[in-house]
Length: 265
Image 1: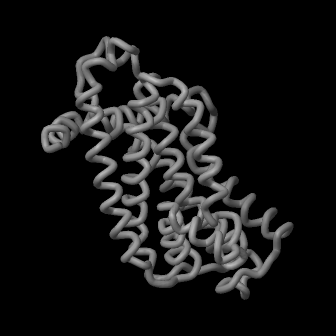
Image 2: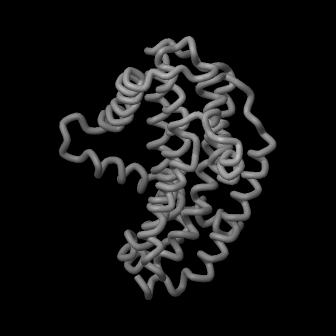
């Protein structure tokens, strides 16, 4: 593991340049250029805030005083899910999409997960900043609890990378994995209280929701961004251990499968 970390650090400039180039390639030849990086998440969050709050103006516990309460609740949950699912989807096709690069250029392959996570993090940070801007416009002020948000973001990215790397390695050898994972993520989205409050779920179903690791991360994001309440650290410590085990397993699989990957690709 330490060798992989040293290799990633030695190629840090390559990783940063690759993340930057991915964003530049998305907006090349467009008149507004990099402004689309801000406009896209801003419009998305504005739709949640204005349209969905008007259509689904239900009062949520803890946010009754703000008529945009549902949008605040929704954006807080989606900020977590967007990062988690984005890291997994990008990791799923990471090795296949970069097959030619892996064959022609000599570089530590551990750079690919770093580029994947870096790109997903930039997207997620822009989404969160857009959300905070819309929160200000609708009169919602986040509390000092927001200082814990970077910890939640890091934990979400680590958990997503752990799952994503395992799926990505398996996808090189078993292409059905690439078809199955998006379906699993759709089930996971509705199995996580993102668009609905936990309070409306029957008690017998709540038990199964709590088996979902993203459940606790979404709750943490909501406590920080929507309710201004303390983060429940005990379940998150368990998730940190789970992320560490998944990453260790993923990097072990990565080292074992790495010599055969180039041949299969």
